[in-house]
Length: 401
Ligand code: CTP
Image 1 (spheres, rainbow, N blue to C red):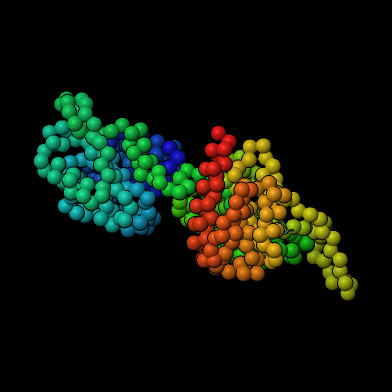
Image 2 (image 1 turned 180 degrees about the vertical axis):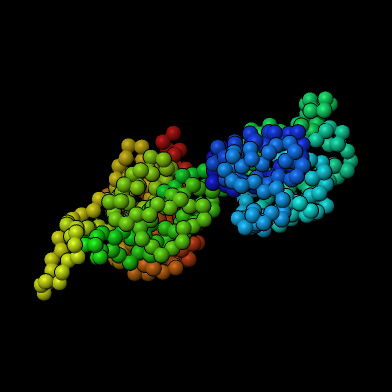
């Protein structure tokens, strides 16, 4: 279930015997890579304990609206803004009526009014309650509001009746929830991005580096995570906040960036080298601060490893994307790097116009073609780049299979 990976699911549980299945659903959602926060009505706690759901979701369970401790952690409005999907399973007949009425008299109904996330419900009730006209009218109201209704199914009920009203099995609910995210551009893709400059130490207080801000890589990470990818950012020293839902590994030198990259590469589908890796490092690291003893000074440098070349040379290599910031003959240098480093795709851009700036224009180059991107904000261009990465990735996977 790739499309649930990295998604935030707020699982609401209302009172009903089917609540015992919510434990399994929580486990399955978590296993599919979703982050799950559980909200229970008072009635639900009569059927299953919050402690069980807390253990399975790994997060604190919310049961009351005015719980000062819970509000201090993640308040209910914050909680309403948090999810990508609100899934209520099981949803009782009473709760369906509450949603239809727009009531906000407990934590779950309040969240439903406050959230902008899509909502899905998995009803569970006695067959007579399900077919009752009041329930059916309420369901129609919910449907008109765009709320997805999963099930119910027909079968033997806890009360002994046979008919429509049983909650769907957790596996089915999981599948239907995942289908809601299928259209995410990078749903389930694992992407590693290197970012920023590297610093190569000369002595304990000095280093060689460059003026890379990391903005392009961070914009790519932000957009990729929002498009459903699982993103790891291997970042040199930059003054930027970690984007939402992105795993960040901080490194300083090229050697550290290489080690982190080789560690992540076997587990990723796409590797994007945006970092401005220092090409050379001092041949010797002086353990003590170098003193100003002469009028001139010569620093011997040795070549750093080429990270992206090492990734592209792996036997099980990810789809490998490079960047080339050039000051002249941009496309020519870009094409040469694409071939020399054996990359699948490369974005070449003008270093003078790009370094530290919020805007960028670039030329995308791949073995069979090219495309101009921007100039526009790094965020917008990041989106265009990801769209292109997706289509080139799909084309190369088709070729291999
Ligand atoms: N790159 C890398 N490791 C290096 C140097 C570069 O992974 N040691 C990657 C960059 O992240 C980028 C691409 O290679 O994706 C091109 O970087 P660039 O600095 O333009 O290439 P160089 O090989 O260093 O060429 P130049 O001689 O122009 O500096």
